[in-house]
Length: 285
Image 1 (cartoon, rainbow, N blue to C red):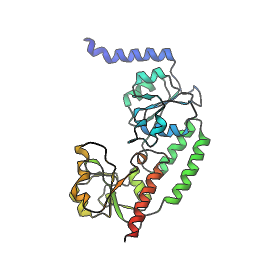
Image 2 (spheres, helix red, strand yellow):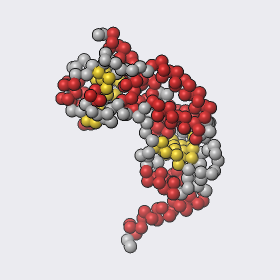
Image 3 (tube, one colour):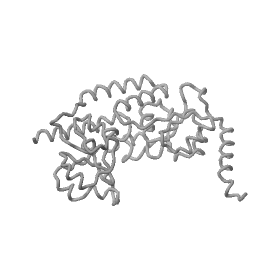
Protein backbone atom coordinates (compact mmCIF):
# COMPACT_ATOMS: atom_id res chain seq x y z
CA UNK A 1 0.00 0.00 0.00
CA UNK A 2 1.44 3.44 -0.90
CA UNK A 3 2.39 5.57 2.11
CA UNK A 4 -0.07 8.27 0.96
CA UNK A 5 -2.94 5.80 1.37
CA UNK A 6 -1.91 5.17 4.98
CA UNK A 7 -1.59 8.81 6.07
CA UNK A 8 -5.13 9.23 7.49
CA UNK A 9 -4.81 6.09 9.61
CA UNK A 10 -1.31 7.07 10.77
CA UNK A 11 -2.57 10.51 11.78
CA UNK A 12 -5.43 8.96 13.71
CA UNK A 13 -3.06 6.59 15.52
CA UNK A 14 -0.76 9.48 16.41
CA UNK A 15 -3.69 11.44 17.77
CA UNK A 16 -4.86 8.49 19.86
CA UNK A 17 -1.33 8.22 21.25
CA UNK A 18 -1.35 11.89 22.25
CA UNK A 19 -4.73 11.43 23.89
CA UNK A 20 -3.49 8.49 25.94
CA UNK A 21 -0.65 10.62 27.27
CA UNK A 22 -2.80 13.61 28.19
CA UNK A 23 -5.63 11.56 29.63
CA UNK A 24 -8.81 12.34 27.69
CA UNK A 25 -11.80 13.54 29.59
CA UNK A 26 -14.87 11.41 30.08
CA UNK A 27 -18.49 12.17 31.03
CA UNK A 28 -17.69 11.05 34.56
CA UNK A 29 -14.75 13.43 35.08
CA UNK A 30 -15.59 16.63 37.01
CA UNK A 31 -19.29 17.50 37.09
CA UNK A 32 -18.31 21.17 36.92
CA UNK A 33 -15.66 21.44 34.19
CA UNK A 34 -12.40 23.20 34.93
CA UNK A 35 -11.03 23.42 31.40
CA UNK A 36 -13.56 24.32 28.73
CA UNK A 37 -12.85 24.69 25.01
CA UNK A 38 -15.33 26.17 22.53
CA UNK A 39 -15.15 25.43 18.79
CA UNK A 40 -18.18 27.42 17.67
CA UNK A 41 -18.88 31.16 17.39
CA UNK A 42 -22.15 30.96 19.32
CA UNK A 43 -20.88 28.70 22.10
CA UNK A 44 -17.85 31.01 22.31
CA UNK A 45 -20.04 33.95 23.19
CA UNK A 46 -22.34 32.19 25.62
CA UNK A 47 -19.36 30.65 27.41
CA UNK A 48 -17.54 33.99 27.62
CA UNK A 49 -20.60 35.53 29.26
CA UNK A 50 -21.11 32.76 31.80
CA UNK A 51 -17.81 30.99 32.51
CA UNK A 52 -15.99 31.47 35.79
CA UNK A 53 -12.58 33.19 35.63
CA UNK A 54 -10.06 30.79 34.11
CA UNK A 55 -12.68 28.19 33.24
CA UNK A 56 -12.80 28.92 29.50
CA UNK A 57 -9.36 28.11 28.12
CA UNK A 58 -9.86 28.42 24.36
CA UNK A 59 -12.36 29.87 21.87
CA UNK A 60 -12.66 29.75 18.10
CA UNK A 61 -10.86 32.19 15.83
CA UNK A 62 -14.15 33.88 14.94
CA UNK A 63 -14.73 34.91 18.55
CA UNK A 64 -12.55 38.03 18.19
CA UNK A 65 -13.89 39.13 14.79
CA UNK A 66 -16.28 42.06 15.42
CA UNK A 67 -18.04 41.41 12.11
CA UNK A 68 -19.18 38.05 13.46
CA UNK A 69 -18.93 38.23 17.24
CA UNK A 70 -20.95 40.59 19.41
CA UNK A 71 -18.41 40.11 22.20
CA UNK A 72 -15.18 40.35 20.22
CA UNK A 73 -13.51 42.50 22.88
CA UNK A 74 -13.98 39.79 25.51
CA UNK A 75 -12.26 37.23 23.27
CA UNK A 76 -9.07 39.14 22.58
CA UNK A 77 -7.23 37.98 25.69
CA UNK A 78 -8.31 34.34 25.36
CA UNK A 79 -6.34 31.66 23.48
CA UNK A 80 -7.87 30.83 20.11
CA UNK A 81 -8.13 27.51 18.34
CA UNK A 82 -8.51 26.53 14.69
CA UNK A 83 -10.81 23.63 15.46
CA UNK A 84 -8.37 20.78 14.83
CA UNK A 85 -8.54 17.65 16.96
CA UNK A 86 -4.77 17.64 17.48
CA UNK A 87 -4.67 21.05 19.14
CA UNK A 88 -7.74 20.33 21.27
CA UNK A 89 -6.22 17.10 22.58
CA UNK A 90 -3.08 19.00 23.60
CA UNK A 91 -5.20 21.52 25.53
CA UNK A 92 -6.70 18.57 27.45
CA UNK A 93 -10.18 20.00 28.15
CA UNK A 94 -12.78 18.32 30.32
CA UNK A 95 -15.59 19.88 28.25
CA UNK A 96 -15.71 20.75 24.55
CA UNK A 97 -18.50 22.98 23.24
CA UNK A 98 -19.53 22.75 19.60
CA UNK A 99 -22.34 23.53 17.19
CA UNK A 100 -24.25 21.02 15.08
CA UNK A 101 -22.13 21.78 12.00
CA UNK A 102 -18.88 22.69 13.76
CA UNK A 103 -15.76 20.97 12.35
CA UNK A 104 -17.56 17.63 12.22
CA UNK A 105 -14.39 15.58 11.72
CA UNK A 106 -12.87 17.13 14.85
CA UNK A 107 -16.00 16.58 16.93
CA UNK A 108 -16.31 12.96 15.84
CA UNK A 109 -12.65 12.27 16.59
CA UNK A 110 -12.88 13.84 20.05
CA UNK A 111 -16.00 11.81 20.83
CA UNK A 112 -14.26 8.60 19.75
CA UNK A 113 -11.33 9.47 22.01
CA UNK A 114 -13.66 9.81 25.00
CA UNK A 115 -13.79 13.58 25.37
CA UNK A 116 -16.99 15.10 26.67
CA UNK A 117 -18.49 17.08 23.79
CA UNK A 118 -21.71 19.07 24.15
CA UNK A 119 -23.35 20.10 20.88
CA UNK A 120 -25.66 23.09 20.51
CA UNK A 121 -28.14 23.22 17.63
CA UNK A 122 -28.69 26.51 15.77
CA UNK A 123 -31.55 28.53 17.23
CA UNK A 124 -34.39 30.05 15.23
CA UNK A 125 -36.38 31.83 17.95
CA UNK A 126 -35.86 33.95 21.04
CA UNK A 127 -37.32 31.13 23.13
CA UNK A 128 -34.71 28.71 21.79
CA UNK A 129 -32.00 31.30 22.46
CA UNK A 130 -33.17 31.55 26.05
CA UNK A 131 -33.10 27.75 26.44
CA UNK A 132 -29.54 27.53 25.12
CA UNK A 133 -28.32 30.21 27.53
CA UNK A 134 -29.86 28.28 30.42
CA UNK A 135 -28.29 25.05 29.17
CA UNK A 136 -24.86 26.67 28.93
CA UNK A 137 -25.16 27.89 32.51
CA UNK A 138 -25.99 24.37 33.68
CA UNK A 139 -23.10 22.78 31.76
CA UNK A 140 -20.59 25.24 33.21
CA UNK A 141 -21.93 24.93 36.74
CA UNK A 142 -23.01 28.57 36.48
CA UNK A 143 -26.79 28.20 36.62
CA UNK A 144 -27.14 31.08 39.05
CA UNK A 145 -25.31 33.44 36.72
CA UNK A 146 -27.41 32.25 33.77
CA UNK A 147 -30.61 32.81 35.74
CA UNK A 148 -29.58 36.39 36.55
CA UNK A 149 -28.73 37.06 32.91
CA UNK A 150 -32.06 35.60 31.77
CA UNK A 151 -34.06 37.68 34.22
CA UNK A 152 -32.67 40.81 32.57
CA UNK A 153 -33.20 39.23 29.14
CA UNK A 154 -36.85 38.47 29.86
CA UNK A 155 -37.60 41.92 31.26
CA UNK A 156 -36.05 43.72 28.30
CA UNK A 157 -37.69 41.37 25.79
CA UNK A 158 -41.12 41.94 27.32
CA UNK A 159 -40.66 45.70 26.98
CA UNK A 160 -39.71 45.45 23.29
CA UNK A 161 -41.68 42.58 21.78
CA UNK A 162 -44.95 43.19 19.96
CA UNK A 163 -47.19 41.36 17.50
CA UNK A 164 -47.60 42.43 13.85
CA UNK A 165 -51.09 43.46 12.77
CA UNK A 166 -52.81 44.60 9.58
CA UNK A 167 -51.20 48.04 9.87
CA UNK A 168 -47.66 46.79 10.45
CA UNK A 169 -45.02 47.73 7.88
CA UNK A 170 -44.17 44.99 5.39
CA UNK A 171 -40.47 44.33 5.55
CA UNK A 172 -37.76 41.85 4.68
CA UNK A 173 -34.12 41.23 5.48
CA UNK A 174 -32.24 41.05 2.17
CA UNK A 175 -28.88 39.30 2.20
CA UNK A 176 -26.06 38.23 -0.09
CA UNK A 177 -27.12 36.75 -3.44
CA UNK A 178 -30.70 37.86 -2.87
CA UNK A 179 -31.36 35.56 0.07
CA UNK A 180 -34.23 36.60 2.35
CA UNK A 181 -34.64 35.56 5.98
CA UNK A 182 -37.78 33.50 6.54
CA UNK A 183 -39.97 33.57 9.64
CA UNK A 184 -38.43 30.26 10.75
CA UNK A 185 -34.98 31.76 11.18
CA UNK A 186 -33.46 33.73 14.02
CA UNK A 187 -33.35 37.03 12.13
CA UNK A 188 -36.85 36.38 10.78
CA UNK A 189 -38.12 35.73 14.30
CA UNK A 190 -36.63 39.06 15.40
CA UNK A 191 -38.42 40.77 12.52
CA UNK A 192 -41.75 39.40 13.72
CA UNK A 193 -40.99 40.16 17.38
CA UNK A 194 -40.42 43.79 16.37
CA UNK A 195 -43.95 44.00 14.98
CA UNK A 196 -42.95 43.81 11.31
CA UNK A 197 -44.69 41.70 8.66
CA UNK A 198 -42.15 39.51 6.86
CA UNK A 199 -42.61 39.55 3.09
CA UNK A 200 -40.79 36.23 2.85
CA UNK A 201 -43.84 34.59 4.40
CA UNK A 202 -46.09 36.07 1.71
CA UNK A 203 -43.95 34.29 -0.87
CA UNK A 204 -43.96 30.96 1.00
CA UNK A 205 -40.32 31.30 2.07
CA UNK A 206 -40.89 30.45 5.73
CA UNK A 207 -37.41 28.97 6.03
CA UNK A 208 -35.80 31.61 3.84
CA UNK A 209 -34.70 31.43 0.23
CA UNK A 210 -33.72 33.43 -2.82
CA UNK A 211 -35.82 36.36 -3.99
CA UNK A 212 -34.81 37.94 -7.30
CA UNK A 213 -34.47 41.70 -7.26
CA UNK A 214 -37.37 42.03 -9.68
CA UNK A 215 -39.65 40.06 -7.32
CA UNK A 216 -38.57 42.25 -4.41
CA UNK A 217 -39.42 45.45 -6.31
CA UNK A 218 -42.80 44.05 -7.35
CA UNK A 219 -43.56 43.05 -3.75
CA UNK A 220 -43.31 46.75 -2.85
CA UNK A 221 -42.11 46.41 0.77
CA UNK A 222 -42.23 49.30 3.20
CA UNK A 223 -38.78 48.52 4.58
CA UNK A 224 -35.83 46.76 2.93
CA UNK A 225 -33.22 45.84 5.54
CA UNK A 226 -29.63 44.90 4.74
CA UNK A 227 -26.54 44.35 6.86
CA UNK A 228 -23.69 46.83 7.04
CA UNK A 229 -21.40 46.15 4.04
CA UNK A 230 -17.91 44.73 4.52
CA UNK A 231 -14.98 46.55 3.02
CA UNK A 232 -13.93 45.80 -0.55
CA UNK A 233 -16.01 44.26 -3.30
CA UNK A 234 -17.72 40.88 -3.54
CA UNK A 235 -20.05 39.56 -6.23
CA UNK A 236 -22.21 37.95 -3.55
CA UNK A 237 -23.15 41.33 -2.03
CA UNK A 238 -23.14 43.44 -5.21
CA UNK A 239 -26.92 43.10 -5.48
CA UNK A 240 -27.39 44.92 -2.17
CA UNK A 241 -26.03 48.16 -3.65
CA UNK A 242 -28.21 48.02 -6.76
CA UNK A 243 -29.68 51.43 -7.73
CA UNK A 244 -33.20 49.98 -7.58
CA UNK A 245 -32.73 49.50 -3.84
CA UNK A 246 -30.73 52.64 -3.21
CA UNK A 247 -33.30 54.88 -4.92
CA UNK A 248 -36.35 53.20 -3.42
CA UNK A 249 -36.25 55.30 -0.26
CA UNK A 250 -36.99 52.11 1.67
CA UNK A 251 -33.48 50.79 2.15
CA UNK A 252 -32.10 50.71 5.71
CA UNK A 253 -28.76 49.36 6.92
CA UNK A 254 -28.94 47.25 10.07
CA UNK A 255 -26.03 48.16 12.35
CA UNK A 256 -26.58 45.09 14.53
CA UNK A 257 -25.31 42.34 12.23
CA UNK A 258 -23.18 40.40 14.72
CA UNK A 259 -25.79 40.52 17.52
CA UNK A 260 -28.33 38.85 15.22
CA UNK A 261 -26.12 35.81 14.74
CA UNK A 262 -26.10 33.96 18.06
CA UNK A 263 -28.11 33.32 21.19
CA UNK A 264 -26.89 36.07 23.52
CA UNK A 265 -28.54 39.08 25.20
CA UNK A 266 -27.27 41.19 22.32
CA UNK A 267 -30.15 39.76 20.27
CA UNK A 268 -32.23 42.33 22.08
CA UNK A 269 -30.02 45.13 20.75
CA UNK A 270 -30.94 43.92 17.28
CA UNK A 271 -34.60 43.72 18.29
CA UNK A 272 -34.48 47.27 19.64
CA UNK A 273 -33.04 48.52 16.34
CA UNK A 274 -35.89 46.85 14.44
CA UNK A 275 -38.49 48.28 16.81
CA UNK A 276 -36.99 51.75 16.33
CA UNK A 277 -37.22 51.37 12.54
CA UNK A 278 -40.87 50.36 12.82
CA UNK A 279 -41.70 53.29 15.08
CA UNK A 280 -39.94 55.74 12.78
CA UNK A 281 -41.89 54.36 9.81
CA UNK A 282 -45.17 54.68 11.73
CA UNK A 283 -44.55 58.35 12.47
CA UNK A 284 -44.29 59.08 8.74
CA UNK A 285 -47.61 57.46 7.80
